[in-house]
Length: 171
Image 1 (cartoon, rainbow, N blue to C red):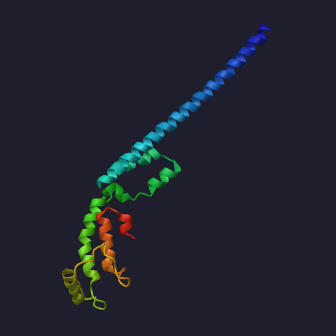
Image 2 (image 1 turned 90 degrees about the vertical axis):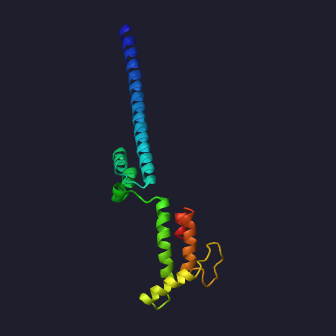
Image 3 (image 1 turned 180 degrees about the vertical axis):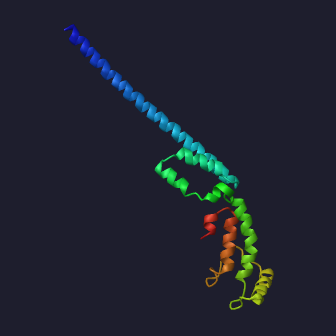
């Protein structure tokens, strides 16, 4: 009977040990997941901060690829980032605003080229018209027959670009 009691105690201790081992494994798995999530978050944040500077982000992109490992969604998303991001970065909003201003005058001149005059004569006419004609104000109501003209579209796009509303500028 003493032997049966020791066997029962041993069985109970073995069961308790198995439960503790299972709890430890769950804790370790949870901790590993937490560490991975932290690494992913840190790598993603570093990439976002680097992208905001407009500078190349090769190191940060590589760190995110390593942190993502084979995680399906994140690894797939990282693979869609163009290689140019690593080599030359992405344009910042202020860079895009400056580029738009550089293109605005030329685009407006091209928009004012008279129909049927694509040659040099038409280009010169577009330059003259762009110089003499005031551009419409983006908040001015456009006439119904002219609201989709290049002049009004450019004016609205310019306003949204200046405000940093790039998605609205594309509408």
